[in-house]
Image (cartoon, rainbow, N blue to C red; front, top):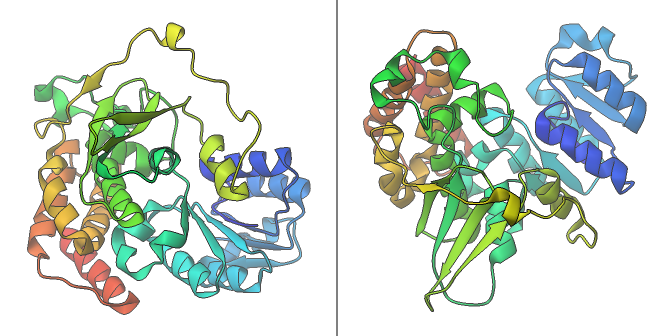
Length: 354
């Protein structure tokens, strides 16, 4: 397989699954964590390696090292592997997703931005999602009429913070996720609930369902639910560990235990909460963006800039949503038809939000 983002949390877990089931790893694409990459090279012996910065090539213990955005595309093209795991972060993951499908390779997608900004340009029926919520929906799907889909959210770092204190909370506090440790950007997106708006868009594209919603489940035990037209609801319950969806993405089916079962007696109780605009202002545009999914490119570009500004202590957590919504309304008449349109809109939105 080809792993894009091998040193991130998804990439590391993908390699754990690959080791357990003795799956071949042909190509590793990493960012700036050269130390970890060298450890991965020593263990998995990839034929091709790609990193972000050309200046660091000399530090990589491999004879074939590509670099930069073009290097990622070149690595995909040169690889013989049929499967590409795209665990890159942000807009940078889009071009690799498009190229993977163009080459007829299977796309196991953990880069949610690909679907958010260009779901109309991807063959969504052929995408294998690596995400606990979308894996949960896939796991529950049956040949029965569906009324709606529901995914869950943890609520992020500020789910219990008094509303009057939100604007004074620091980026360090926002990175303190209550349930697990993730990358910086996705942790901030969890705190603002923008991540969940993205996931609703993903579900819409993946399963062609406009009736998708989310609610907070604080223990992250239930990941997804499907409401059937007969009035029944099924829920996907599993311990929060990405090795489960990754295993299915890599192998198609799994016939042995990947995780221990949830002990419901130990869990004791589950708490559900409504996602409210007072705490998560971005939720205001949820229904509108599901009706206008092509504007996902606007929200993503605005959010990448606003999150960066928040992490640089230029704005507060509530202003992240304010900037995102302002851009979303400003660029209301867009209708991207191809990748060039996507890149142009992305560029204009970033300029506006900077």
